[in-house]
Each structure stands twice: as structure tokens, then as C-alpha cells.
Length: 390
Ligand code: FAD
Ligand code: DHB
Image (cartoon, rainbow, N blue to C red; front, side, top):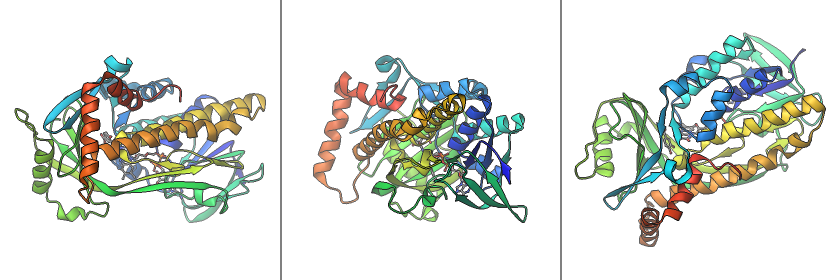
């Protein structure tokens, strides 16, 4: 049986970042990924990096292109009741965010991995985890027509919400906390210069809309829709008309362009506790999901593996398991802060399908409070750029 120190399941942002951090610390890892490299590199998802997450990529040696091509934003616009108001992150917190696509981070991390020569296996099927409650766990997987075995000291479950890691933990061990929302997001990527320098989060009677971007030539936009929305019901023309209505403001123009990608994302909150069982450590979407409104999913995934990498390095260096034992508790403090922030942003900005007027009044009051109170705006800003100590 082949052996490694840390077996990593999944080559999303969590698995790839963990591989990079451990490689730089001289710890051997093997990454097993179910999909092909092209698929993983093309999957359009998140786009906002917290201040300290951008710094972490730089410290991990994969920040060069991000610093060159990423767009540094010192704030975002909140729009409601026909008014647009800037939340000035830089002024309120001294921090900013970096707009840089998850696809680009994933490409940079895969390039670094391949250059390092550390093993990463794409197109691997049937991953199974064994002996997780012993100190000799091992994995089995199918590759190139054969079944293979891989022994490890530790296993990192970085295989997302639908992965195999979380479901390898026996029934009754984990507590699950979940909330479904009666909305989804229809997202598009469009070949047109962004119509705003910064992101616009818009509350509108027809539903939430978000203007974001990927580069000076690429816009990313979202519309609140039903969770099971049929994307084929949305012609390009219908998408642009709806975006014009929800984002429109006197004296401002939303520029249109060719739509390159269109998809629907459901929204849910989900957390499991603890994020560890025996020698298996869950990280990122495998352990928790947030609705996307706070732009936290990718950031949480990277923060988890930062904590995990430090704990693993300490354990190999001294045999001291204190940090590893504290992994779940340490991460869950940040996870629940992000769960609250994402739920709060979602609830404040989305139109309830039942049209409940009481909730609408609460939303408008909260949005007005953010416009008129520096303290309220600072709380949003602090959560958005990423809280240092939770
Ligand atoms: P993932 O990125 O899901 O990576 C997990 C990896 O594991 C995948 O490559 C998968 O193929 C692999 N895998 C799964 N099962 C197995 C298996 N059995 N064996 C081997 N490999 C396996 N967040 C935002 O902040 N803003 C957004 O706009 C946004 N949009 C999103 C849109 C979609 C459709 C989705 C699904 C998520 C979105 N997110 C968004 C969330 C954000 O992208 C995730 O939080 C982030 O990708 C988490 O990274 P991860 O590495 O934990 O998981
Ligand atoms: C993007 C996604 C988000 O969920 C968000 O809150 C802001 C921006 C994006 O894809 O650019």
C-alpha cells in the first residue's frame, strides 16, 4: 500500500490550499479529486476574497497573479428604495477586499501543485475512507481501471457538500444544523465592462440583484429567483431586462453584453458539529454551507485549512495534539459568525415570496439604519472584510 502523511479528498479551494500550505511546511500530501482538471478549473463560483485571505494566498506563494489581476475594492454599494449608498470598508475598518474569481485561485493553486511535483490525482472514482477511528486510516479509490490503496496519518475531507467524507462518519456522531431559503440565485457571466467600480447589492420589490465582476472586461451578475428555477425559462433578453429593472437608478446605465455562462444556485445554511472524527478532519463546504449573500463560502474554506495546516505542522513538529484537538472548536467560532452574517444579509436583501409586508418594513428600516449610522455600517464592513479574532 502506498503511504503519505496527509491524504486530501477534493481539489477545490480547501483541498488545494491545504496541499499548498503543507507542501511548503515539508509535509507530504496526496490529493484525490473526482473530476477532471479542466472541469475543476472552469467551474464558475465565488469571487470575493477577504483581506486576510488574500494575504494568506500571498504568504502561501500563490498570490502573484492575484495581486496583479485582482481588483482591490475599498467598499460596496447598498441600494434600496431608489438610493445607492457606499459602505466604505477602508475608512470604517482599514481593510479592503480583493475581487478575484475562485476559478483563477484554483488555476493558480493547481499550477503551483503541478510545479512542486507533489501528487494530485484527477478523475478518481469510488473514494472510500477506512479506519478513521484508528491511527492507521487508509483510502481506497479507482483510477485507470484499477483499485488502489493509500495509507495516511491523517485524512482531510475537503470534498464539498456532496462529498464522501462527511458521510463516512457513523450516524449519531455529528449534529446537523440547517436552514433552507425560499430563493435561489440566477447567476450570469457576461462579456461586458462592469457598470460600477464596486459591487452593488440591490434590494428591490421584484427581488434581490447583485452586480459583481471578474475583470475590467467581465461582469458577474445575480438575480434572486426560485430555488428550483428553470434556467431555460430565462432568455438573455429576459435576464438583462430584469437586471435593468432591479439595479436601475436615475442617471446610471447598466451596460449589457454577451452572456457566457448562466446557472442557478440554491441557497442553504448548513453546519455539522464537530468538524472532526478520529483521524478525519472536515474543511470547507464538507462541513458547512452559507447562502452566498455575504460572500463567505470560499473564505471560510480557506480559513479552515489555514487552522488545520498550522495544527498539523505543530503535531508533526512536537507530537503535541493540542491544536489538532481544538481544530473543530477554533473553526466553528468563525463558521457561526459567518453563518449569522450570511443569514442576516440574505434576510435583509431578499424579497420573501409570500410578500409579507411586516418583513419588508423591517428590511427597509435596517437598510436605512445602515445608511444613517456609522456604527451599523461598521458592523457590516467588519464582517464583510473578515473579522480578525472571533
Ligand atoms: P468545493 O469547491 O466544492 O470543492 C470540493 C471538491 O471535492 C470538488 O472539486 C469536487 O469535485 C471534489 N469531490 C467531491 N466529492 C468527491 C469524492 N467523492 N471524491 C473525490 N473528490 C470529490 N460562494 C460565494 O461566496 N459566492 C458565490 O457566488 C458562490 N457561488 C457558488 C455557486 C455554486 C454552484 C456552488 C456549489 C457554490 C458557490 N459558492 C459561492 C460557495 C463556494 O464556491 C464554496 O464555498 C467553495 O467552493 C468551497 O470550497 P471547498 O473546497 O470546500 O469545496
Ligand atoms: C460574488 C458572489 C457573492 O456571493 C457575493 O456576495 C459577491 C460577489 C461574485 O461571484 O462575484
